[in-house]
Image 1 (cartoon, rainbow, N blue to C red):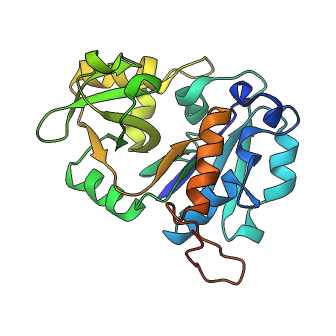
Image 2 (cartoon, one colour):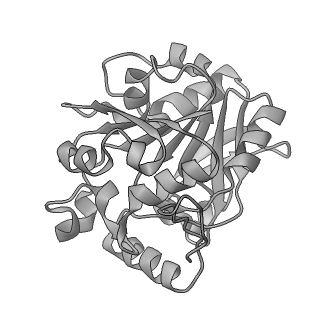
Length: 250
């Protein structure tokens, strides 16, 4: 399986933290959050990776280079104009020619990618979203599934009393290359607003995987602080591959 890291976000909600730093380079336990994602990919033997960039791309490219120093093969696509989550993935269709993972470069997680892929394949899905149960759904996109896990509907940041589920979209996906025929090239196109409703409307095999483990979207100063505190409290497993072996450091 190949992977794409979504790393084009500006991170305006993080205020001064991202004034001169792209969001994927924000430090967590002394390393850029994107490096923790790269180490997670290495743990599951995912070595062929592409990342889309936009804001201060040189900082990311100078840090990771071609990926060889981090145990992967890393390519980049730089978006002069933001293309949205799906549009950015479409640009890399040439690279993503087999089952592939899409993961946010600014989220902290220790998701079991092997279990996620097994679920996707067992369901014979064209697309699968990793879902996380949360108490406060008002800041997230809520996903409604049936008893088989098939996705039937979405709610965008509903009030708690109106939410039909407490499972939210983590921004971690597995896709088959067939999805590219549904994404226009060279224009802004979003997974949540555009592609996912289309998959539901067309009746495509589209599933939600309730993940175990830790996940935190580092989108605001508050969630960034929470992620750092959770790491210090040992609530998330981070993998350090400096010596060629992975160690749980959280």
